[in-house]
Amino acid sequence: MKVLAVDVGTGTQDIVLFDTRLDIENAYKLILPAPTMIIRRRIQQATRQGAAMLLEGAIMGGGPSAWAAEDHARAGYPIYATPSAALSFNDDLDAVAQMGIQIVSEDEARRLPENVVRVTLRDFDFEAIESAFAAFGVELEPLGAAAVAVFDHGAAPPDVSDRQFRFDYLDQRIRAHNRLSAFAFRREDIPPIMTRLQAVADSAARLDAPLIVMDTAPAAVLGARFDPHVAALTRALIANVGNFHTLAFRLGPDGIEGVFEHHTGLLDLPRLETLLEKLADGSLRHEDVFGDQGHGALIYSHQALSIDPAAGNLVVTGPRRGLLRASRLRPYLAVPFGDMMTAGCFGLLAAAADLLPELGDAIRAALESPSGVGRPPWEV
Image 1 (tube, rainbow, N blue to C red):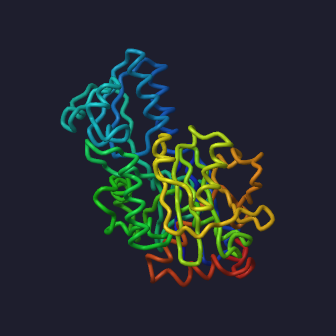
Image 2: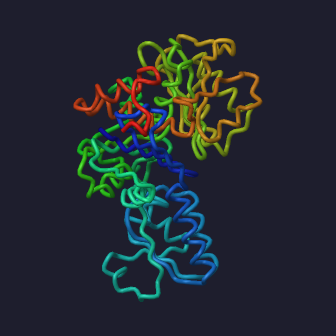
Image 3: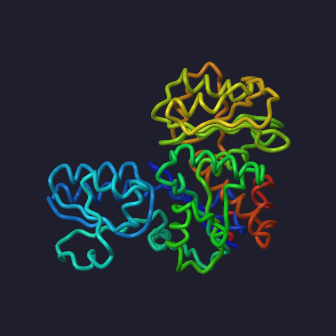
């Protein structure tokens, strides 16, 4: 049985093809540019050519692609976007128009001249991933399931901060189901407010297998727990330092005890250390983070956790974990199955086991068993 796990970040998309016939360390993996980086490069190429361009498709991650689109318009070249594509840059289409991007309907997009460069936006390109594996003789199908993680702010109403909206959503999910897999959904159960998750499901319409979608940071934290050292901890603080967002969970026997989320670009080492210490001792307040242009903080248990370098109970994962390299807190760097970059994929697999009972036993057996239970690839 195979499960395709795809963790879509800002810098990279990390891909694991899980196969129950193999040792999990022998699973085939790809670390590729993130979709927003791919779109950025296509926009920059059009800018160098002085070409008009159209962005169409679905809501996806912005950041680098949005900056490139704004640069294209600033250079004086026409850039159009359909409403669904434009929402990748801002939930307020008037704000997108102020970037210099002309919003056009689907009908208007079809009538644009043939020389307009057309770029399709989507976070999950199953066909491209399938082709990449096929180039090396690996077939994806038949798949038992696919699981995809993206970061979703949610569609905040016009008068509500997207940072507050996002954090209210985190609070609601934790209170409903106090476990990290609470941030994962089967495609038919995606909340309507989570428009980027829904766009992933729409992009996977041709996929003839169950689909799980999940938030990226909880997936990475869940995956980090498969590091043998982390798995042995009764209580721990696990931080995912991503390219755009830093999210840390304090975890205990009863589940999530506290969480904060901030923008990585606004953090330096002293500030991050302070946030981690306050989350650990339970003194961190929502306004400490939200007032610093972060998303916020929530404390569910005031039972303090003492960060102990000897015990290694401050755990770090994520592509920007080097921010804590010189930390006086001496964090433990998690490497689940020997690979930090695919922690989110292992978290996706664990969430799939929770949400897809028909696959759960097989996935858990592979994730929780000691290395060597499966077989090497040449025996398959």
